[in-house]
Structure formats: C-alpha cells, structure tokens
Image 1 (cartoon, rainbow, N blue to C red):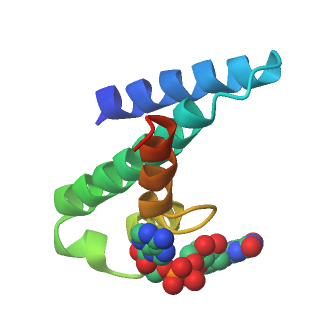
Image 2: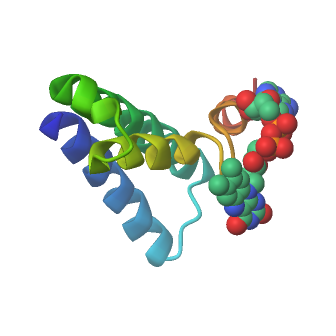
Length: 92
Ligand SMILES: Cc1cc2nc3c(=O)[nH]c(=O)nc-3n(C[C@H](O)[C@H](O)[C@H](O)COP(=O)(O)OP(=O)(O)OC[C@H]3O[C@@H](n4cnc5c(N)ncnc54)[C@H](O)[C@@H]3O)c2cc1C
C-alpha cells in the first residue's frame, strides 16, 4: 500500500512540477489523475479488508475514506474520460 501511494505521489508531484514550470503535459496529467484515483481506491479497499466487518460499519472512519476516495474516479473527469484523453494523445 505504501509503495502504491508513494508511486502515485511521486508521479503527481513530477507532473505538478512540470505544470508549475510552464509545461502543459495533458497526457501525463491524465495518467497521474487516473493512476492516483485507482490506487487510492485499491488502498482504501485493502484498509476495509484489514478491519474486517468493523471497517464496513459507518461508525468507523475507514468506511468514510472508502466512500470518499471513490469519488476521485468519477469527479473532475471520470476514469473513462482520462483513458479517452490518454488514448487521443497517442493519436488513437
Ligand atoms: C459528490 C460529488 C461532487 C461533485 N462535485 C462537483 C463539482 O463541484 N463541480 C462539478 O462541476 N461537478 C461535480 N460533480 C459532478 C461530476 O463531475 C460528475 O458526476 C462527473 O463528471 C461524471 O458525470 P456524470 O455523473 O454525469 O456521469 P456520466 O457522464 O453520465 O457517466 C456515467 C458513466 O459513463 C461513462 N462515460 C460517459 N461518457 C463517456 C464517454 N464519452 N466514453 C466512455 N465512457 C463514458 C463515465 O465514465 C461513467 O462511468 C460532483 C459529483 C459528485 C458525485
């Protein structure tokens, strides 16, 4: 889980740095958004699994994180739209 988070973080920081320095790397921006959203969901899912039944209960914060991260694959451009943008950037 830490490896997935770190990889997503480093990729996102690199793309943010390029953007802050005048580039507009649309492909990599879309890739970072897609990867980070999916990784966050995978990690939250694993956290629920670690907590077992308790993780599924509304009384435990991990349940809230699980629901919250899911929005990242929908809001601000869905996974499918990111894939479309990435595909188009390769001329597909
Ligand atoms: C909690 C929450 C907060 C939000 N906050 C904001 C906000 O602050 N500002 C704002 O502007 N919007 C906000 N939204 C809206 C959000 O941006 C949209 O939900 C999102 O863009 C997806 O649009 P949709 O729900 O109409 O789904 P749809 O566009 O109907 O998509 C449904 C499914 O079809 C897929 N799909 C759609 N078109 C294509 C295509 N061309 N090719 C392949 N697949 C496709 C999608 O990927 C998705 O899986 C929020 C949504 C939620 C749930």
